[in-house]
Image 1: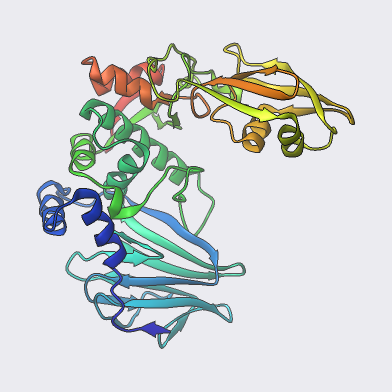
Image 2: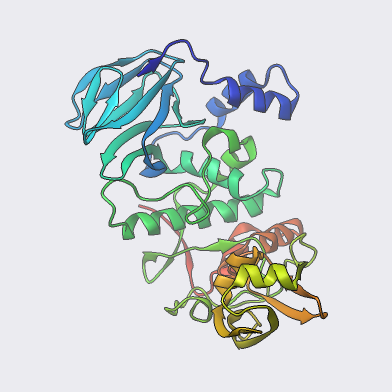
Length: 382
């Protein structure tokens, strides 16, 4: 079904106008897109924006070609209108078109609208047993323009942003090479790396990506799993102490994240609240670490209560209690529990706040990367 005349750019533009306080923001935005855009396309990445939905709103900033699953042009979408794509009998239904998959390709370097945001590239809609998948097919570096602004502050030093650009490019290519999914390579959430389209781009993120175009971290001639996190709380971890498989380039190193707003944190829980969140042991009376990493991250915790005892993984506790990391200690004050922790994230690979502080001290992105990805090499894609 189609909703003619709906201003699909309105929410995005208003948000940016409010944030930047400039009536000419959109014009300025388009100017620096042209000025610092990449000279040529490189690798195309397939990013799942919506998955398992019954319908999704799509559109284009310019006239767009609609293609069916065979790649044949079957029609056009008018510019600046919202269209509802929906699952229908194993097909994608979009206006008068029906196919197992439909693609929307903007003309004249236009942008696509998926759900509630603008994106570069094109849209592919695929029907599955679980509903629709809306995938953004986008140039890798253009994808990174947004990832950097989603994962780091755009006002951070360029050397930190460059380090993040190389890490994020490496991560995306690693996931792309490992993907067994025929529809998409990566998602757009923290499970992968955050991607929000045009709204999180900035001139600084484009500059950092363009300055490092084609650069990746490699080990043994292969692109590495360049994971990253916000702050380790003083020391990153060996990957096998947090996950399972040892990797020569993900080794624990001293971090430089002191002073980060997430370096130290405290959360308090009443005994009632803690017992409700953990469950299965009655009223919690004590929490004792059973296994920790060499740096103190909780691997397993023994939780004792009036109704029994159980062993809980550090990752499960972090999720159930909404903690920033698994690097924490617990103290019982009688009717309540205080959790004192450090850092934010899994503590593997690049520390974003460490990169920020190092860059602020004059360290370049090559040195930052070599510190956090031990034994890995900064390489240029062929």
